[in-house]
Image (cartoon, rainbow, N blue to C red; front, side, top):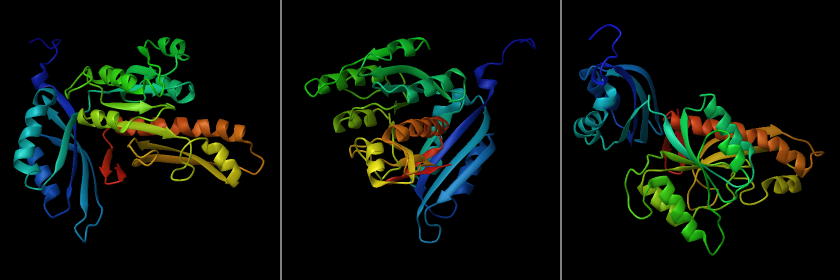
Length: 308
């Protein structure tokens, strides 16, 4: 091999990430670091958190490491880790390759501000994802999306057609409307002001494929859940309005919260003012949540999240 030849994948260093969640107990960090060291890995970053370090809470870990030939070794590494460390500590553990961007599908209706912000950030390479598709229940935003070169799928949804529409959505996301499997490799779904409720059945099927969904809600949850939160905020005379990015569950607007932000308002603000100012917060909050999920920074802790 000449100096100009690329090194084979088995010889190239790669950056991996390890996410761990397990009951807290002594020895976890020592076991994890020893396992990586013994396999030639160099740990480059580590974050950890215990929900109750004294009373036996739950332990969370996010670790980044460099390892030669990572891309070819990842599956074997994960299996060996489970056998030698994971089972001993009752771990939920996941290895990922930082070089592979997460593939996402964006769901949208007619509001374009969150969608276009995500597409702009993706095009500039600051979001850490690959936008595989946009799925919409209205056709209005097709020209905007196609200008980015992203496949656009229009799937109308009515009360009568919702089961068939969700079956088609599932087929596009997984390649299979009825069984589990890798499908086309969508890692997660982003609801960018998608004004439809995902059914419990669709969420269950997505969960079986390992595909979480992230939603942006235009209020500082748990305040003003449901429809028209800016109108609710105006009626209550609040002095702060906000936005919340959260995981989607069958309970409307009650999924684990990932990120929130607020802006100060006054009594003079109209609902239109609140909507306009809130749109800026929605864009920022959703993009942070998407980037953190893409960077494997989010771990579930019951009904809440740990975000490293």
